[in-house]
Image (cartoon, rainbow, N blue to C red):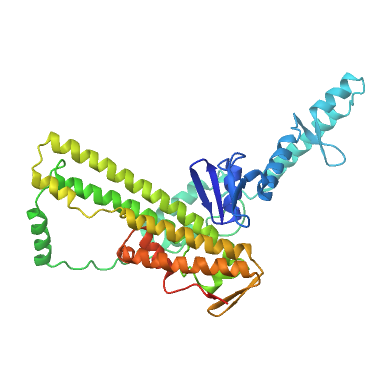
Length: 397
């Protein structure tokens, strides 16, 4: 996966190198973009990426190729096509080749004569003979009048001959019409009950608080659906599994997934805050314009907020930052630690001590998130807890 900053404030996550190459060729990723370097955990210019260099070099070579001007009709003796510009240069120098025009005219004439002969040698259609159409038509008409189903469709269709060959054409087999399944029966009582329930449902005015609440829930559901889709793309399931903590590729990929998840959470909070602000402004305006009662206003303020509380939001951000710090320590000590079941051993004692401090802090952050209601939250903090699941960080030895 490649995390690219297209421009300040806009980031994009590309799953494969082919997606990144396509974005470079389309111009979506240009020289001003930056890419996240997983080893150094820094943003670097995209111009340093080898794939970007290769694509730019290919484009420059394509642009540097000379464009041919005008092509002549006949090939030369070596099989290559001669250009009209070279012929004009020979004529200007007085070194004209007088045999080119007669040779071209003669070659074209030979091709024309051969085409006419091939046209006359081909098989002729049945109606080409001027003496037989009337007889053939009279016979076919008699057969149609006598027995159109047996004689005309049997004998006349068998005698049809293709213009391009002498093989007899066979009529395609007639396919039977597909049998449609029988429609299910609908009970009259259940249908009448549904229609009656819809007819009795109270109609909500467009400017009422009930309609505004329905629109608010729909907008918030759309933002939450984008959050869940983004977290699925980040693939943060079993965050502390052994495969993610291994130095052979698990740690860099997990750090990239964490960076993508942090970006997705940030976008979700911005979008949800924008939805809350827009609908709050609408409530203020509609309450004054349509003279809402205090009961209707209380109905709006008694709704369940879709944004996470400030305490839970802060606890979730701290937990995500500490987890990234854990993987940063593992990435800096790649090849200098070993995993043994539920234990981890570092060659550097200082790295082991730093890992132990961060492990205890992550455990405290998880307890804070659960105490703030993160286990029942449908927001990003709840999704982060589900990504951790039952996995736990190994103890340092």
